[in-house]
Image 1 (cartoon, protein in one colour):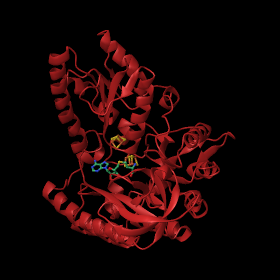
Image 2 (cartoon, helix red, strand yellow; image 1 turned 135 degrees about the vertical axis):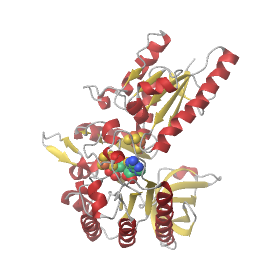
Image 3 (tube, rainbow, N blue to C red; image 1 turned 90 degrees about the vertical axis):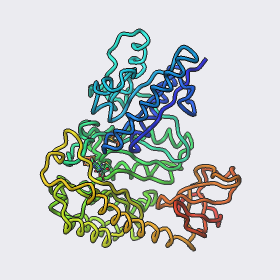
Length: 450
Ligand code: SAH
Ligand code: SF4
Ligand code: F3S
């Protein structure tokens, strides 16, 4: 009988992608997906270390897993195996076993392909439960392809980060920047499209730093890769995330102007609008640089919408610096955003900086900033009402006879349509903006985005 696997995923899209690949790998070892942890034989927590709250969630989940395991052991003689994967596994390694000794395997993001072996060792009680090295073989080559997961698929093109922003754990948990060869990415994209995908989101911690080897032996940047992907028949939409402002080169900006498949929506984290804070963060751009990049993008693609990440309360951020961030947000205007209180992370330089900001001040600033960003998001969504927009229908909605898809600007759009239309690109007349989505009705349908 097949063994049951439950993977719980925290953190970024890279973790979502990795979870899919782990599931494909474990399927080869007889595991099939279970809907919850309750009757699983193996539970994998794919964790995130980016902020303290995210990391602490793992330990409360592990507390629940211990209880589940004890209950199942009492009822059936054996509870599920528990593995901790992802960035907390990488950052904390052995320390996880000290706090949660019942954990069977701790496996960092570069070592997922060793998971079956680690679990087998558990069965044979050989120990060696922590695997957090950065092996020479690439995990991309060692893991099986994820199965095409729906009409919109993730595709990792690079991993790791060499930027070392002073607040960030990613360079430590994910290691040095590594770009996959373009041929492997193009082949994976073709397979995804053959499996039904109509939209691909290129993933990387720093995706526009992509510099993979091209089939011609030359170094390809992200723009070149996107242009080749745009030649794949029936691949209607291309997106990429997360990009760094310092790596938005002229080629990539130009691609937004002349590759119609490249969607007019870009996540471009700014973090702060104050030059001294940006310098202390080691972000490698100024607020002026950021503004100029946005202006150039909008001049080649006037309907481009932006989303961003902002940190408030970075050490040394005074009222004037915070005001500068608010001003930048007003000047640029964001369709969507993620904002956070600065969280000091062990091992990062900013955690040791003087002039740490009090929690109360961080909370106040976050509330003010989020108020402004929410207003902008609402205004952006309201501006879509009354327009007709192309929507890729991706999944059934919560109500019968309803499908959900995405607009070019990544807005979820609900529409009454027959399930047979899943995977179609349709024109939707938008009637209303709800808190987290738009609602509309089918207008003319189109084969491909116009
Ligand atoms: N590679 C992306 C960011 C990845 S982390 C980039 O360069 O922008 C996702 C977001 O988490 C970051 O953009 C940042 O806003 C936030 N973040 C990272 N470390 C943080 C910390 N220590 N405290 C608060 N927010 C943090
Ligand atoms: Fe972290 Fe900076 Fe790298 Fe983004 S660019 S992952 S914030 S170090
Ligand atoms: Fe979190 Fe690791 Fe992603 S720290 S944000 S899961 S790269």
